[in-house]
Image 1 (cartoon, rainbow, N blue to C red):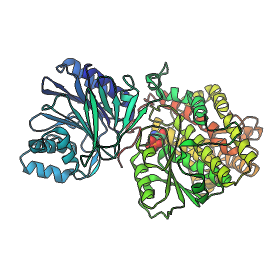
Image 2: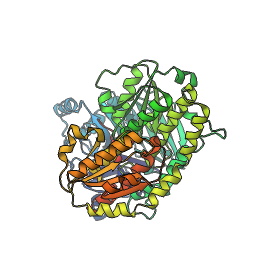
Image 3: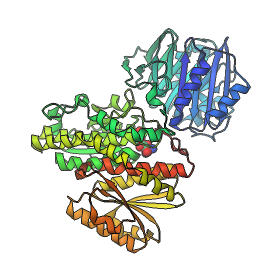
Image 4: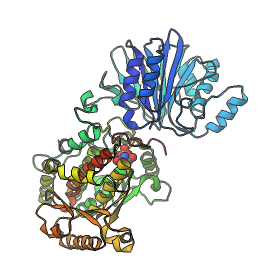
Length: 614
Ligand code: M6R
Protein backbone atom coordinates (compact mmCIF):
# COMPACT_ATOMS: atom_id res chain seq x y z
CA UNK A 1 0.00 0.00 0.00
CA UNK A 2 1.04 3.65 -0.08
CA UNK A 3 4.52 4.51 1.12
CA UNK A 4 5.34 7.76 2.88
CA UNK A 5 8.68 9.48 3.42
CA UNK A 6 9.43 12.82 5.07
CA UNK A 7 12.82 14.40 5.72
CA UNK A 8 14.23 17.50 7.32
CA UNK A 9 17.95 17.99 7.97
CA UNK A 10 21.06 19.15 6.20
CA UNK A 11 21.27 16.67 3.31
CA UNK A 12 19.74 17.21 -0.13
CA UNK A 13 16.15 16.26 0.67
CA UNK A 14 15.38 15.04 -2.84
CA UNK A 15 18.05 12.33 -2.65
CA UNK A 16 16.97 11.18 0.81
CA UNK A 17 13.28 11.10 -0.12
CA UNK A 18 13.69 9.31 -3.45
CA UNK A 19 16.06 6.78 -1.89
CA UNK A 20 13.47 6.24 0.87
CA UNK A 21 10.72 5.74 -1.70
CA UNK A 22 12.89 3.16 -3.46
CA UNK A 23 13.14 1.23 -0.20
CA UNK A 24 9.36 1.33 0.15
CA UNK A 25 8.72 0.11 -3.41
CA UNK A 26 8.07 -3.38 -2.05
CA UNK A 27 4.87 -2.15 -0.41
CA UNK A 28 3.24 -2.04 -3.86
CA UNK A 29 2.29 1.15 -5.72
CA UNK A 30 1.29 2.53 -9.08
CA UNK A 31 2.48 6.17 -9.03
CA UNK A 32 4.98 8.26 -7.10
CA UNK A 33 5.70 11.88 -6.27
CA UNK A 34 7.71 14.31 -4.17
CA UNK A 35 7.38 17.84 -2.78
CA UNK A 36 10.35 19.96 -1.71
CA UNK A 37 10.49 23.23 0.16
CA UNK A 38 13.24 25.49 -1.03
CA UNK A 39 13.66 29.22 -0.37
CA UNK A 40 10.10 29.39 0.88
CA UNK A 41 8.72 27.90 -2.32
CA UNK A 42 7.07 24.57 -2.91
CA UNK A 43 8.12 22.38 -5.85
CA UNK A 44 6.33 19.14 -6.67
CA UNK A 45 6.88 16.38 -9.21
CA UNK A 46 4.71 13.29 -9.69
CA UNK A 47 4.39 10.50 -12.21
CA UNK A 48 2.19 7.49 -12.84
CA UNK A 49 3.95 4.13 -12.91
CA UNK A 50 7.15 3.04 -11.26
CA UNK A 51 9.74 5.23 -9.58
CA UNK A 52 11.85 5.22 -12.71
CA UNK A 53 9.28 7.54 -14.34
CA UNK A 54 9.52 9.99 -11.47
CA UNK A 55 13.32 9.84 -11.50
CA UNK A 56 13.29 10.61 -15.23
CA UNK A 57 10.98 13.58 -14.71
CA UNK A 58 13.23 14.88 -11.91
CA UNK A 59 16.31 14.56 -14.12
CA UNK A 60 14.65 16.33 -17.03
CA UNK A 61 13.36 19.11 -14.85
CA UNK A 62 15.27 19.23 -11.54
CA UNK A 63 13.51 21.03 -8.70
CA UNK A 64 15.45 23.69 -6.74
CA UNK A 65 17.69 22.09 -4.09
CA UNK A 66 16.22 21.94 -0.60
CA UNK A 67 16.77 20.21 2.71
CA UNK A 68 13.14 19.49 3.54
CA UNK A 69 10.95 17.18 1.49
CA UNK A 70 8.20 14.61 1.43
CA UNK A 71 7.58 11.72 -0.96
CA UNK A 72 4.89 9.18 -1.68
CA UNK A 73 4.25 5.96 -3.52
CA UNK A 74 0.51 5.60 -4.23
CA UNK A 75 -1.55 2.42 -4.43
CA UNK A 76 -4.67 3.75 -6.13
CA UNK A 77 -7.99 3.68 -4.28
CA UNK A 78 -9.87 6.86 -5.33
CA UNK A 79 -9.22 7.59 -8.99
CA UNK A 80 -6.97 5.85 -11.52
CA UNK A 81 -3.19 5.78 -11.13
CA UNK A 82 -2.27 8.76 -13.32
CA UNK A 83 -0.01 11.81 -12.88
CA UNK A 84 -2.91 13.95 -11.72
CA UNK A 85 -3.96 11.62 -8.92
CA UNK A 86 -0.42 10.90 -7.73
CA UNK A 87 0.54 12.54 -4.42
CA UNK A 88 1.55 15.12 -3.15
CA UNK A 89 -1.61 17.19 -3.50
CA UNK A 90 -1.56 20.92 -3.02
CA UNK A 91 -4.05 23.62 -1.99
CA UNK A 92 -5.35 26.39 -4.27
CA UNK A 93 -2.42 28.70 -3.53
CA UNK A 94 0.27 26.02 -3.94
CA UNK A 95 1.55 26.68 -0.42
CA UNK A 96 0.50 23.43 1.27
CA UNK A 97 1.48 19.91 0.09
CA UNK A 98 -0.06 16.76 1.53
CA UNK A 99 0.59 13.04 1.17
CA UNK A 100 -1.68 10.38 2.60
CA UNK A 101 -2.04 6.67 3.23
CA UNK A 102 -5.50 5.28 3.99
CA UNK A 103 -9.04 6.13 2.97
CA UNK A 104 -10.94 9.24 4.02
CA UNK A 105 -14.46 7.92 4.07
CA UNK A 106 -16.29 11.27 4.25
CA UNK A 107 -14.25 12.86 1.48
CA UNK A 108 -17.24 13.34 -0.85
CA UNK A 109 -19.00 15.55 1.71
CA UNK A 110 -15.80 17.47 2.44
CA UNK A 111 -15.10 17.93 -1.24
CA UNK A 112 -18.60 19.27 -1.94
CA UNK A 113 -18.22 21.70 0.95
CA UNK A 114 -14.83 22.88 -0.31
CA UNK A 115 -16.09 23.39 -3.85
CA UNK A 116 -19.03 25.36 -2.54
CA UNK A 117 -16.54 27.48 -0.61
CA UNK A 118 -14.70 28.35 -3.83
CA UNK A 119 -11.86 25.80 -3.82
CA UNK A 120 -10.84 24.17 -7.09
CA UNK A 121 -9.94 20.50 -6.70
CA UNK A 122 -7.88 19.04 -9.52
CA UNK A 123 -7.75 15.31 -8.78
CA UNK A 124 -10.16 12.43 -8.13
CA UNK A 125 -8.53 11.59 -4.80
CA UNK A 126 -9.84 11.73 -1.26
CA UNK A 127 -6.46 13.20 -0.23
CA UNK A 128 -6.66 16.49 -2.07
CA UNK A 129 -9.51 17.66 0.15
CA UNK A 130 -7.08 17.63 3.08
CA UNK A 131 -4.70 20.11 1.43
CA UNK A 132 -7.60 22.53 0.89
CA UNK A 133 -8.98 22.01 4.39
CA UNK A 134 -5.54 22.82 5.81
CA UNK A 135 -5.43 25.91 3.61
CA UNK A 136 -8.67 27.10 5.22
CA UNK A 137 -7.63 26.23 8.75
CA UNK A 138 -4.28 28.01 8.39
CA UNK A 139 -6.16 31.29 8.18
CA UNK A 140 -6.99 31.03 11.88
CA UNK A 141 -4.93 28.19 13.32
CA UNK A 142 -1.63 30.00 13.47
CA UNK A 143 0.56 27.03 12.58
CA UNK A 144 0.56 23.92 10.40
CA UNK A 145 0.40 21.46 13.31
CA UNK A 146 -2.71 23.09 14.74
CA UNK A 147 -4.32 23.36 11.28
CA UNK A 148 -3.62 19.65 10.65
CA UNK A 149 -4.98 18.75 14.09
CA UNK A 150 -8.22 20.58 13.36
CA UNK A 151 -8.55 18.93 9.96
CA UNK A 152 -7.97 15.48 11.47
CA UNK A 153 -10.92 16.13 13.74
CA UNK A 154 -13.10 16.36 10.64
CA UNK A 155 -11.87 13.23 8.88
CA UNK A 156 -13.48 9.81 9.03
CA UNK A 157 -11.64 6.62 8.15
CA UNK A 158 -8.01 5.61 8.22
CA UNK A 159 -5.30 8.10 7.49
CA UNK A 160 -1.67 8.86 7.86
CA UNK A 161 -1.11 12.38 6.63
CA UNK A 162 2.09 14.28 6.13
CA UNK A 163 1.94 18.00 5.33
CA UNK A 164 4.36 20.84 4.65
CA UNK A 165 3.68 24.56 4.27
CA UNK A 166 5.72 27.34 2.77
CA UNK A 167 4.90 29.49 5.82
CA UNK A 168 7.14 27.28 8.01
CA UNK A 169 9.87 25.88 5.72
CA UNK A 170 11.66 23.94 8.51
CA UNK A 171 8.66 21.87 9.59
CA UNK A 172 7.13 18.58 8.48
CA UNK A 173 3.87 17.62 10.21
CA UNK A 174 2.60 14.03 10.38
CA UNK A 175 -0.72 12.75 11.70
CA UNK A 176 -1.58 9.12 12.32
CA UNK A 177 -4.86 7.28 12.67
CA UNK A 178 -4.91 3.58 11.81
CA UNK A 179 -2.33 3.68 9.02
CA UNK A 180 1.36 3.19 9.86
CA UNK A 181 3.85 6.02 10.51
CA UNK A 182 7.20 5.91 12.32
CA UNK A 183 9.78 8.58 13.13
CA UNK A 184 13.50 8.11 12.46
CA UNK A 185 15.66 10.11 14.84
CA UNK A 186 18.96 11.27 13.40
CA UNK A 187 21.70 13.69 14.37
CA UNK A 188 20.61 17.11 13.12
CA UNK A 189 18.07 15.42 10.87
CA UNK A 190 14.81 13.57 11.33
CA UNK A 191 12.63 11.31 9.22
CA UNK A 192 9.04 10.18 8.89
CA UNK A 193 8.08 7.02 7.03
CA UNK A 194 5.57 4.25 6.66
CA UNK A 195 8.22 1.89 7.90
CA UNK A 196 11.82 2.01 9.04
CA UNK A 197 13.19 0.58 5.78
CA UNK A 198 12.85 4.08 4.29
CA UNK A 199 15.42 5.62 6.64
CA UNK A 200 17.45 2.63 7.88
CA UNK A 201 20.45 3.78 5.81
CA UNK A 202 20.55 6.97 7.93
CA UNK A 203 19.46 5.95 11.42
CA UNK A 204 18.34 2.90 13.39
CA UNK A 205 16.78 4.95 16.19
CA UNK A 206 13.04 5.18 15.84
CA UNK A 207 9.92 6.35 17.63
CA UNK A 208 6.58 4.56 17.44
CA UNK A 209 3.66 6.86 16.89
CA UNK A 210 0.41 5.91 18.55
CA UNK A 211 -3.14 6.27 17.36
CA UNK A 212 -4.41 9.83 16.93
CA UNK A 213 -1.06 11.50 17.32
CA UNK A 214 0.52 14.47 15.58
CA UNK A 215 4.26 14.73 15.12
CA UNK A 216 6.14 17.94 14.38
CA UNK A 217 9.47 17.19 12.79
CA UNK A 218 12.28 19.74 12.65
CA UNK A 219 15.98 19.21 11.97
CA UNK A 220 16.76 19.68 15.67
CA UNK A 221 13.85 17.92 17.30
CA UNK A 222 10.64 15.94 17.29
CA UNK A 223 7.48 16.85 19.20
CA UNK A 224 4.56 14.47 19.54
CA UNK A 225 1.10 15.49 20.73
CA UNK A 226 -2.32 13.90 20.63
CA UNK A 227 -5.16 15.02 18.39
CA UNK A 228 -6.33 16.77 21.58
CA UNK A 229 -3.17 18.92 21.57
CA UNK A 230 -1.76 17.41 24.78
CA UNK A 231 1.82 16.08 24.92
CA UNK A 232 1.90 12.37 24.11
CA UNK A 233 4.04 9.63 25.60
CA UNK A 234 6.19 8.04 22.94
CA UNK A 235 8.09 4.78 22.75
CA UNK A 236 11.60 4.92 21.39
CA UNK A 237 13.25 1.80 20.02
CA UNK A 238 16.37 0.69 18.22
CA UNK A 239 15.97 -1.26 14.99
CA UNK A 240 17.90 -4.52 15.32
CA UNK A 241 18.72 -4.97 11.64
CA UNK A 242 20.76 -2.81 9.33
CA UNK A 243 20.57 -1.61 5.76
CA UNK A 244 22.13 -4.77 4.33
CA UNK A 245 19.09 -6.76 5.52
CA UNK A 246 16.93 -4.61 3.27
CA UNK A 247 19.13 -5.14 0.22
CA UNK A 248 19.24 -8.02 -2.24
CA UNK A 249 22.76 -9.07 -1.28
CA UNK A 250 23.63 -10.54 -4.68
CA UNK A 251 20.31 -12.30 -5.30
CA UNK A 252 18.22 -11.39 -8.34
CA UNK A 253 15.12 -11.02 -6.18
CA UNK A 254 14.39 -10.35 -2.54
CA UNK A 255 12.16 -13.41 -2.59
CA UNK A 256 15.11 -15.66 -3.46
CA UNK A 257 17.14 -14.13 -0.66
CA UNK A 258 14.28 -14.50 1.81
CA UNK A 259 13.71 -18.14 0.89
CA UNK A 260 17.42 -18.77 1.45
CA UNK A 261 17.34 -16.95 4.79
CA UNK A 262 14.75 -19.32 6.24
CA UNK A 263 17.05 -21.59 8.27
CA UNK A 264 18.49 -18.52 9.99
CA UNK A 265 15.05 -16.94 10.48
CA UNK A 266 13.71 -20.13 12.08
CA UNK A 267 16.78 -20.35 14.34
CA UNK A 268 16.46 -16.67 15.35
CA UNK A 269 12.80 -17.13 16.23
CA UNK A 270 13.71 -20.00 18.55
CA UNK A 271 16.66 -18.14 20.06
CA UNK A 272 16.38 -17.34 23.76
CA UNK A 273 13.05 -19.07 24.13
CA UNK A 274 14.26 -22.52 25.14
CA UNK A 275 15.84 -22.65 28.59
CA UNK A 276 18.74 -24.97 29.49
CA UNK A 277 16.20 -27.19 31.28
CA UNK A 278 14.13 -27.40 28.08
CA UNK A 279 11.36 -25.22 29.51
CA UNK A 280 10.00 -22.47 27.32
CA UNK A 281 10.10 -18.82 28.33
CA UNK A 282 8.15 -16.33 26.26
CA UNK A 283 9.17 -13.01 27.78
CA UNK A 284 7.03 -10.68 25.74
CA UNK A 285 3.95 -12.79 26.47
CA UNK A 286 2.72 -10.25 29.09
CA UNK A 287 -0.24 -12.58 29.81
CA UNK A 288 0.32 -14.37 33.10
CA UNK A 289 0.46 -18.16 33.40
CA UNK A 290 -2.60 -17.99 35.65
CA UNK A 291 -4.53 -16.10 32.94
CA UNK A 292 -3.42 -18.69 30.38
CA UNK A 293 -4.70 -21.46 32.64
CA UNK A 294 -8.09 -19.73 32.69
CA UNK A 295 -8.37 -19.61 28.90
CA UNK A 296 -11.14 -21.91 27.66
CA UNK A 297 -11.11 -21.13 23.94
CA UNK A 298 -8.68 -19.77 21.38
CA UNK A 299 -9.61 -17.87 18.25
CA UNK A 300 -6.94 -17.11 15.67
CA UNK A 301 -7.52 -14.30 13.18
CA UNK A 302 -5.29 -13.38 10.26
CA UNK A 303 -5.22 -12.77 6.51
CA UNK A 304 -3.55 -14.49 3.56
CA UNK A 305 -0.44 -16.46 4.36
CA UNK A 306 -0.70 -15.56 8.04
CA UNK A 307 -4.15 -17.16 8.00
CA UNK A 308 -2.56 -20.36 6.72
CA UNK A 309 -0.14 -20.26 9.67
CA UNK A 310 -3.23 -19.93 11.88
CA UNK A 311 -4.82 -23.01 10.31
CA UNK A 312 -1.70 -25.02 11.16
CA UNK A 313 -1.69 -23.55 14.67
CA UNK A 314 -5.12 -25.05 15.28
CA UNK A 315 -3.79 -28.59 14.88
CA UNK A 316 -0.88 -27.89 17.23
CA UNK A 317 -2.94 -26.09 19.89
CA UNK A 318 -5.68 -28.69 19.98
CA UNK A 319 -3.19 -31.55 20.02
CA UNK A 320 -0.66 -30.22 22.52
CA UNK A 321 -2.67 -27.81 24.66
CA UNK A 322 -6.04 -29.55 24.48
CA UNK A 323 -7.87 -26.27 23.92
CA UNK A 324 -10.66 -25.68 21.41
CA UNK A 325 -9.32 -23.45 18.67
CA UNK A 326 -11.12 -21.65 15.83
CA UNK A 327 -9.36 -19.95 12.94
CA UNK A 328 -11.01 -17.15 11.04
CA UNK A 329 -10.17 -14.72 8.27
CA UNK A 330 -9.84 -11.34 9.96
CA UNK A 331 -12.03 -9.70 7.32
CA UNK A 332 -14.90 -12.08 8.15
CA UNK A 333 -14.45 -12.23 11.91
CA UNK A 334 -15.49 -8.69 12.68
CA UNK A 335 -18.60 -8.77 10.57
CA UNK A 336 -20.20 -11.71 12.32
CA UNK A 337 -21.05 -12.01 16.00
CA UNK A 338 -18.22 -14.10 17.43
CA UNK A 339 -18.89 -15.36 20.93
CA UNK A 340 -16.00 -14.11 23.06
CA UNK A 341 -15.47 -13.68 26.77
CA UNK A 342 -12.72 -12.78 29.23
CA UNK A 343 -11.52 -16.37 29.04
CA UNK A 344 -11.13 -16.33 25.28
CA UNK A 345 -7.61 -15.87 23.95
CA UNK A 346 -7.58 -14.21 20.55
CA UNK A 347 -4.32 -14.67 18.66
CA UNK A 348 -3.78 -12.23 15.80
CA UNK A 349 -1.07 -13.20 13.32
CA UNK A 350 0.36 -10.53 11.05
CA UNK A 351 3.84 -10.23 9.54
CA UNK A 352 3.55 -6.48 9.13
CA UNK A 353 1.45 -5.75 12.20
CA UNK A 354 -0.35 -3.19 10.05
CA UNK A 355 -2.95 -5.20 8.11
CA UNK A 356 -6.13 -3.22 8.55
CA UNK A 357 -8.48 -6.21 8.70
CA UNK A 358 -6.33 -7.86 11.36
CA UNK A 359 -6.22 -4.65 13.43
CA UNK A 360 -9.97 -4.13 13.18
CA UNK A 361 -10.55 -7.76 14.24
CA UNK A 362 -8.23 -7.18 17.18
CA UNK A 363 -10.15 -4.11 18.28
CA UNK A 364 -13.44 -5.98 17.90
CA UNK A 365 -12.10 -8.71 20.21
CA UNK A 366 -10.79 -6.11 22.67
CA UNK A 367 -14.27 -4.56 22.96
CA UNK A 368 -15.51 -7.95 24.05
CA UNK A 369 -12.83 -8.26 26.74
CA UNK A 370 -10.95 -11.17 25.18
CA UNK A 371 -7.22 -11.50 25.91
CA UNK A 372 -5.11 -10.56 22.92
CA UNK A 373 -1.87 -12.10 21.80
CA UNK A 374 -0.10 -10.90 18.65
CA UNK A 375 2.38 -12.76 16.47
CA UNK A 376 4.25 -10.14 14.53
CA UNK A 377 7.49 -9.57 12.64
CA UNK A 378 7.73 -5.79 12.78
CA UNK A 379 8.85 -4.05 15.93
CA UNK A 380 7.16 -0.68 16.28
CA UNK A 381 4.07 -1.66 14.31
CA UNK A 382 0.52 -1.28 15.55
CA UNK A 383 -0.35 -4.90 16.35
CA UNK A 384 2.12 -5.47 19.22
CA UNK A 385 1.20 -2.13 20.76
CA UNK A 386 -2.48 -2.98 20.90
CA UNK A 387 -2.14 -6.57 22.17
CA UNK A 388 -1.82 -7.75 25.77
CA UNK A 389 1.11 -9.93 24.77
CA UNK A 390 3.26 -10.44 21.71
CA UNK A 391 5.54 -13.05 20.28
CA UNK A 392 7.90 -11.53 17.73
CA UNK A 393 9.01 -13.64 14.81
CA UNK A 394 12.62 -12.74 14.15
CA UNK A 395 12.55 -13.15 10.39
CA UNK A 396 14.19 -9.77 9.72
CA UNK A 397 12.67 -7.45 7.13
CA UNK A 398 10.57 -9.27 4.55
CA UNK A 399 10.64 -7.15 1.41
CA UNK A 400 9.18 -9.43 -1.29
CA UNK A 401 5.41 -9.19 -1.43
CA UNK A 402 5.03 -12.97 -1.24
CA UNK A 403 5.53 -14.10 2.31
CA UNK A 404 8.13 -16.86 2.79
CA UNK A 405 10.45 -16.54 5.77
CA UNK A 406 7.74 -14.73 7.73
CA UNK A 407 5.46 -17.75 7.25
CA UNK A 408 8.02 -20.24 8.49
CA UNK A 409 8.74 -18.12 11.54
CA UNK A 410 5.02 -17.70 12.20
CA UNK A 411 4.84 -21.49 12.29
CA UNK A 412 7.67 -21.57 14.81
CA UNK A 413 5.83 -18.96 16.89
CA UNK A 414 2.56 -20.90 16.92
CA UNK A 415 4.38 -24.12 17.84
CA UNK A 416 6.05 -22.26 20.71
CA UNK A 417 2.71 -20.90 21.90
CA UNK A 418 1.02 -24.30 21.69
CA UNK A 419 3.86 -25.95 23.61
CA UNK A 420 3.97 -23.12 26.13
CA UNK A 421 0.24 -23.55 26.75
CA UNK A 422 0.82 -27.30 27.19
CA UNK A 423 3.62 -26.55 29.67
CA UNK A 424 1.60 -24.02 31.67
CA UNK A 425 -1.67 -25.94 31.64
CA UNK A 426 -0.03 -29.31 32.23
CA UNK A 427 -1.67 -30.98 29.25
CA UNK A 428 1.64 -32.62 28.35
CA UNK A 429 4.30 -33.92 30.70
CA UNK A 430 7.41 -31.80 30.99
CA UNK A 431 9.52 -34.40 29.19
CA UNK A 432 7.01 -34.56 26.31
CA UNK A 433 7.22 -30.79 25.85
CA UNK A 434 11.00 -31.00 26.15
CA UNK A 435 11.19 -33.73 23.49
CA UNK A 436 9.10 -31.69 21.06
CA UNK A 437 11.13 -28.54 21.75
CA UNK A 438 14.29 -30.51 20.97
CA UNK A 439 12.79 -31.53 17.63
CA UNK A 440 11.81 -27.94 16.94
CA UNK A 441 15.41 -26.93 17.59
CA UNK A 442 16.50 -29.23 14.73
CA UNK A 443 14.28 -27.48 12.22
CA UNK A 444 16.79 -24.89 10.89
CA UNK A 445 19.01 -27.79 9.82
CA UNK A 446 16.07 -29.64 8.20
CA UNK A 447 14.99 -26.53 6.28
CA UNK A 448 18.60 -26.08 5.13
CA UNK A 449 18.55 -29.65 3.82
CA UNK A 450 15.40 -28.93 1.82
CA UNK A 451 17.01 -25.87 0.28
CA UNK A 452 20.04 -27.91 -0.81
CA UNK A 453 17.87 -30.19 -2.95
CA UNK A 454 15.73 -27.68 -4.84
CA UNK A 455 17.24 -27.85 -8.34
CA UNK A 456 14.77 -30.54 -9.58
CA UNK A 457 11.91 -28.40 -8.24
CA UNK A 458 13.18 -25.42 -10.22
CA UNK A 459 13.46 -27.58 -13.35
CA UNK A 460 9.93 -28.83 -12.84
CA UNK A 461 8.64 -25.28 -12.38
CA UNK A 462 10.25 -24.14 -15.63
CA UNK A 463 8.71 -27.08 -17.47
CA UNK A 464 5.23 -26.06 -16.24
CA UNK A 465 5.45 -22.39 -17.16
CA UNK A 466 3.00 -22.90 -20.04
CA UNK A 467 0.27 -24.45 -17.85
CA UNK A 468 -2.89 -22.58 -16.93
CA UNK A 469 -3.91 -24.38 -13.76
CA UNK A 470 -2.27 -26.28 -10.91
CA UNK A 471 -4.10 -27.98 -8.05
CA UNK A 472 -2.70 -28.64 -4.58
CA UNK A 473 -3.93 -31.34 -2.22
CA UNK A 474 -3.15 -32.05 1.41
CA UNK A 475 -4.61 -33.51 4.57
CA UNK A 476 -4.29 -32.52 8.23
CA UNK A 477 -1.53 -29.86 8.43
CA UNK A 478 -0.80 -30.61 4.78
CA UNK A 479 -4.11 -28.98 3.86
CA UNK A 480 -3.05 -25.42 4.86
CA UNK A 481 0.28 -26.14 3.14
CA UNK A 482 -1.70 -26.92 -0.04
CA UNK A 483 -3.60 -23.62 0.38
CA UNK A 484 -0.31 -21.79 0.83
CA UNK A 485 1.22 -23.45 -2.26
CA UNK A 486 -1.78 -22.35 -4.30
CA UNK A 487 -1.69 -18.80 -2.94
CA UNK A 488 2.01 -18.46 -3.81
CA UNK A 489 1.34 -19.57 -7.36
CA UNK A 490 -1.67 -17.27 -7.80
CA UNK A 491 0.09 -14.17 -6.54
CA UNK A 492 3.37 -14.74 -8.37
CA UNK A 493 2.51 -16.63 -11.56
CA UNK A 494 -1.03 -15.20 -11.99
CA UNK A 495 -2.23 -18.75 -12.64
CA UNK A 496 -5.38 -20.49 -11.57
CA UNK A 497 -4.29 -22.49 -8.54
CA UNK A 498 -6.47 -24.08 -5.86
CA UNK A 499 -5.70 -25.90 -2.66
CA UNK A 500 -8.05 -28.62 -1.48
CA UNK A 501 -8.34 -30.96 1.47
CA UNK A 502 -7.61 -34.27 -0.21
CA UNK A 503 -10.52 -35.89 1.63
CA UNK A 504 -12.87 -33.49 -0.17
CA UNK A 505 -11.68 -34.60 -3.59
CA UNK A 506 -14.59 -36.89 -4.33
CA UNK A 507 -17.06 -34.24 -3.11
CA UNK A 508 -16.39 -32.06 -6.12
CA UNK A 509 -12.82 -31.09 -7.03
CA UNK A 510 -12.10 -34.43 -8.75
CA UNK A 511 -14.27 -33.18 -11.61
CA UNK A 512 -11.48 -30.73 -12.42
CA UNK A 513 -8.98 -33.50 -13.13
CA UNK A 514 -8.17 -33.87 -16.79
CA UNK A 515 -5.35 -35.25 -18.87
CA UNK A 516 -2.02 -33.73 -17.92
CA UNK A 517 -3.33 -31.41 -15.18
CA UNK A 518 -0.49 -30.85 -12.69
CA UNK A 519 -1.58 -31.74 -9.15
CA UNK A 520 0.77 -31.25 -6.22
CA UNK A 521 0.08 -33.60 -3.33
CA UNK A 522 1.52 -33.10 0.16
CA UNK A 523 1.82 -36.52 1.78
CA UNK A 524 1.85 -36.84 5.60
CA UNK A 525 4.62 -38.84 7.28
CA UNK A 526 4.18 -42.61 7.21
CA UNK A 527 3.89 -42.59 10.98
CA UNK A 528 0.34 -41.30 10.50
CA UNK A 529 -0.64 -44.53 8.83
CA UNK A 530 -4.32 -43.85 8.29
CA UNK A 531 -3.93 -40.44 6.68
CA UNK A 532 -0.84 -41.48 4.78
CA UNK A 533 -2.56 -44.44 3.16
CA UNK A 534 -5.69 -42.46 2.41
CA UNK A 535 -3.76 -39.79 0.55
CA UNK A 536 -1.84 -42.43 -1.39
CA UNK A 537 -5.27 -43.67 -2.53
CA UNK A 538 -6.18 -40.10 -3.51
CA UNK A 539 -3.02 -39.91 -5.63
CA UNK A 540 -4.02 -43.09 -7.41
CA UNK A 541 -7.54 -41.78 -8.00
CA UNK A 542 -6.37 -38.59 -9.68
CA UNK A 543 -3.64 -40.35 -11.63
CA UNK A 544 -6.16 -42.81 -13.00
CA UNK A 545 -7.99 -39.80 -14.40
CA UNK A 546 -4.96 -38.39 -16.16
CA UNK A 547 -3.48 -35.99 -13.58
CA UNK A 548 0.24 -35.34 -13.65
CA UNK A 549 1.15 -36.03 -10.03
CA UNK A 550 3.81 -34.05 -8.20
CA UNK A 551 4.23 -35.69 -4.83
CA UNK A 552 5.93 -34.17 -1.80
CA UNK A 553 6.72 -36.91 0.71
CA UNK A 554 9.26 -37.65 3.41
CA UNK A 555 12.53 -39.22 2.28
CA UNK A 556 12.45 -42.98 2.15
CA UNK A 557 8.69 -43.12 1.56
CA UNK A 558 8.85 -45.67 -1.25
CA UNK A 559 5.11 -46.36 -1.12
CA UNK A 560 4.33 -43.23 -3.17
CA UNK A 561 6.97 -43.83 -5.86
CA UNK A 562 4.76 -45.87 -8.24
CA UNK A 563 2.16 -43.08 -8.36
CA UNK A 564 4.36 -40.00 -8.53
CA UNK A 565 5.24 -38.51 -11.91
CA UNK A 566 7.59 -36.29 -9.94
CA UNK A 567 8.66 -37.07 -6.40
CA UNK A 568 10.00 -34.33 -4.14
CA UNK A 569 11.54 -35.76 -0.98
CA UNK A 570 11.79 -33.75 2.23
CA UNK A 571 13.44 -34.71 5.54
CA UNK A 572 11.38 -36.86 7.88
CA UNK A 573 9.99 -34.76 10.75
CA UNK A 574 7.02 -35.20 13.10
CA UNK A 575 3.62 -34.63 11.47
CA UNK A 576 2.82 -31.33 13.16
CA UNK A 577 6.19 -29.85 12.19
CA UNK A 578 6.03 -31.09 8.61
CA UNK A 579 4.76 -27.75 7.15
CA UNK A 580 8.20 -26.29 7.93
CA UNK A 581 9.75 -28.58 5.34
CA UNK A 582 6.89 -29.15 2.86
CA UNK A 583 6.17 -25.44 2.30
CA UNK A 584 9.68 -24.63 1.11
CA UNK A 585 9.51 -26.58 -2.21
CA UNK A 586 6.20 -24.86 -2.94
CA UNK A 587 7.77 -21.43 -2.43
CA UNK A 588 10.66 -22.33 -4.72
CA UNK A 589 8.23 -23.80 -7.27
CA UNK A 590 6.08 -20.66 -7.44
CA UNK A 591 9.07 -18.32 -7.52
CA UNK A 592 10.79 -20.19 -10.34
CA UNK A 593 7.63 -20.68 -12.39
CA UNK A 594 6.76 -16.98 -12.14
CA UNK A 595 10.31 -16.00 -13.05
CA UNK A 596 10.16 -18.31 -16.07
CA UNK A 597 7.02 -16.44 -17.12
CA UNK A 598 8.98 -13.18 -16.89
CA UNK A 599 7.19 -11.82 -13.83
CA UNK A 600 8.69 -9.55 -11.21
CA UNK A 601 8.32 -11.87 -8.21
CA UNK A 602 9.12 -9.15 -5.70
CA UNK A 603 6.35 -6.86 -6.84
CA UNK A 604 3.53 -8.91 -8.35
CA UNK A 605 0.82 -7.00 -10.18
CA UNK A 606 -1.98 -5.39 -8.16
CA UNK A 607 -0.58 -6.54 -4.84
CA UNK A 608 0.74 -4.62 -1.86
CA UNK A 609 3.00 -5.98 0.86
CA UNK A 610 0.75 -4.92 3.68
CA UNK A 611 -2.89 -4.18 3.11
CA UNK A 612 -3.46 -1.11 5.24
CA UNK A 613 -6.98 -0.36 3.98
CA UNK A 614 -10.08 -2.55 4.11
O1 M6R B 1 1.29 -8.56 7.14
P1 M6R B 1 0.29 -9.65 7.21
O2 M6R B 1 0.85 -10.96 7.66
O3 M6R B 1 -0.91 -9.27 8.05
O4 M6R B 1 -0.24 -9.86 5.74
C1 M6R B 1 -1.29 -10.74 5.46
C2 M6R B 1 -1.41 -10.98 3.99
O5 M6R B 1 -1.68 -9.79 3.31
C3 M6R B 1 -0.14 -11.61 3.40
O6 M6R B 1 0.19 -12.80 4.06
C4 M6R B 1 -0.34 -11.91 1.91
O7 M6R B 1 -1.30 -12.92 1.76
C5 M6R B 1 0.99 -12.29 1.27
N1 M6R B 1 1.17 -11.58 0.04
C6 M6R B 1 1.09 -13.74 0.95
O8 M6R B 1 2.28 -14.09 0.33
